[in-house]
View 1 (cartoon, rainbow, N blue to C red):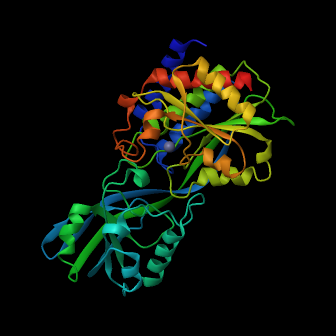
View 2: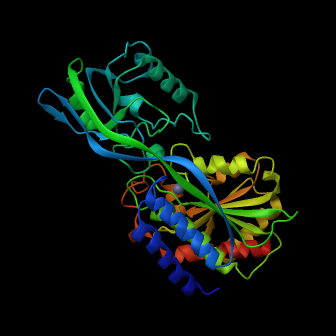
View 3: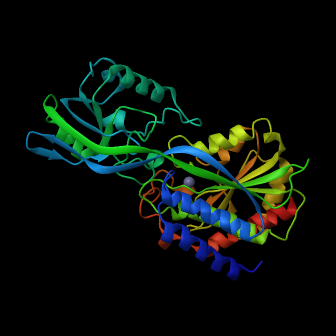
Length: 405
Ligand SMILES: [Zn+2]
């Protein structure tokens, strides 16, 4: 495999995905353009493709305004929230205890401080949903406030590099909400008890999105290897490292493997919904494969690969001894690849939870700076931070691994 040629192909795919198409939020026209592109490229490389339709919502806003008399405050519609045009008394709340002991009916509730420090898991998110979050949602739903204003600080661990971040990002939660910077929230605190007007011009639009699965040979009674990457992005980012590079690695593998057949057949899975509130593509895939996860020998998931700084990492997760040895051999032969620490915020978790071992492919820098970086889910995640050679090296490493398994 010629590395130069892989680099050239990587540049061309990433140009289409992150520059011509750009943001690929689930439910958008551009998201469908990206799955169409992937499907076409797979077919050109001779792979059989399967397209699964997902019922999702797209979401749009014409902005939000918050006023109290002649004072204006800067707010944004929370992603996937319903819109609203309401007027009510402002009640400021900073803890769950205070929330439990307050009458919030018909109030506009300001969340600030501790209660607004960590993004709340979407109501129906299947992979991570702490008890405190479900409790918070149920107290709110039973309390019937008119709307929520969330003043948030920076929290890279829960919301990527976005500041302020939407505390709620949930198309299944029906109390309208907006968000603002913590510093703006402090100004608002001084006006608690006064009557505010809040308008958020947001709408939910029923739409479709697709998972794409590809095979280059019939999967018979042999175990298979599933290589996956998510194709969607958050709202407001062209998603180069998260996860245009992952999609590109899969497309390069499709081309590289078109004439190669190893001991285990390969399935390429382009998930739609890793960065979306309900993870619809992942849920659908689990549904479709119920009872058949035992047939998957290994998942290799690519997310966050190809960053300009540092090496690429292959993180082993629950790998049996013999696979671990093979991985070490591959890493030894490819000095640009290193063994990474375990991490779980990606689609490899879908497989781990079903009892399949996995390897998560990413960039060392991102794994080590997950809690403090300011790039993920922002416009900064664009092609200027991609190292195309790193992308090609991930492909070379994965092909060698497949050969040895
Ligand atoms: Zn991702």
